[in-house]
Image (cartoon, rainbow, N blue to C red; front, side):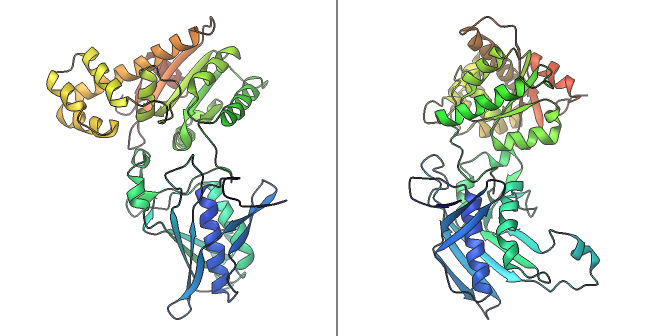
Length: 391
């Protein structure tokens, strides 16, 4: 099945536009004429998609090629909408038959580098790319690369570093630009009713499985989901949530979940502490106001309370507090996760009488599991997890 891209009809994730440019550049490097539409195969989705590319050309002495595309991810992902993408390709030294390690490594034929504006794990680290995005590139480029050749691919987002400052990338150890993330071709509308329905279906499926043991984790966002797996939280069913946290909590209670862990970056969890259970920024924010109210309740000195309102982000407020008085910062964030637990319990009681234990756990900008409420600590103990800095 082939689908044509039409503005406003389908909204494809950033890695699809990178792959389209990569294919156009590689075909140009092989001597083919430019094609404004690239037909891409989507792994495991039984479809191909025609994605437009702006231009492609040979560079220097003809040993490198470049292609440009422009991301059209739709109104939902306004950060990357219209993002210009440059992809450079060149052949590396041929793979010789004596180089057994290269011949037996199925990934050796493709080298993917992060250029300017593309996120890496730490300065100078590996490119931040999801398994789906890597597979998408490999699936579509493999037919274009001879068995004895290696292709080097460099991705550049000219405005990537600037745009990344408007994300929470640094909270997940990603620096210098935008990450190549995604688990499916089509943009998942985290704020849409359709996405909520899909997530509810997945929640019910997991809870009704014979293998379900009563513990479920709601994990906020793709980066949080990745960290949850790395920490070992996938010992229980994980549900990656968008912005509809309230309805998912109620659905978990309806499915007789006994223990629910809410896991996420502190910048998202702070909204729950303020009683905001649909977290999309278009609907409500008030994060710094919520944090300031919590600081008043915790009894922080007035000079710190006044300072909190001057910051633009929760992250900068945390850095400020930890730099001035680490113990006060620890107290404030412990109150935050406690309030998340309290507000969440009160929220589900609006819709029924359940005994579900709700715990909250938050990680910081360095991907460290830093804070948990009393119930969150109990649930983390189930997985043998300790908070950073605890004995």
